[in-house]
Image 1 (tube, helix red, strand yellow):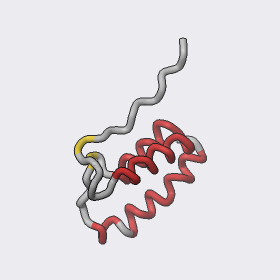
Image 2 (cartoon, rainbow, N blue to C red; image 1 turned 90 degrees about the horizontal axis):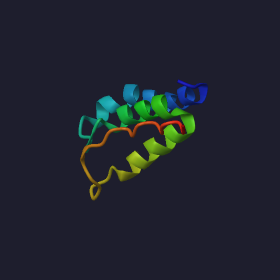
Image 3 (cartoon, rainbow, N blue to C red; image 1 turned 135 degrees about the vertical axis):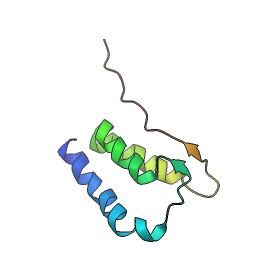
Image 4 (tube, rainbow, N blue to C red; image 1 turned 180 degrees about the vertical axis):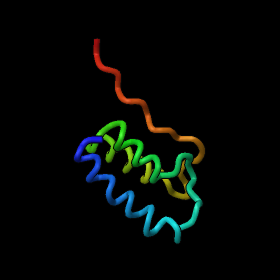
Length: 79
């Protein structure tokens, strides 16, 4: 994980420790948004991973979707 991705993961980890126990386990998607964010940061780095996590959180509302929503694979390098 890049240094920027590690830095961007700090608020997610803090949320999981401090707020997640009180919010409960009622995420509309699998994996949960915090797991998705950490995986996106790990796979795609700080900038794109943050963008993917923000898009996912924006979709998580009563009129949004639900179900299995994995982190997309990293773009393959051009040959």
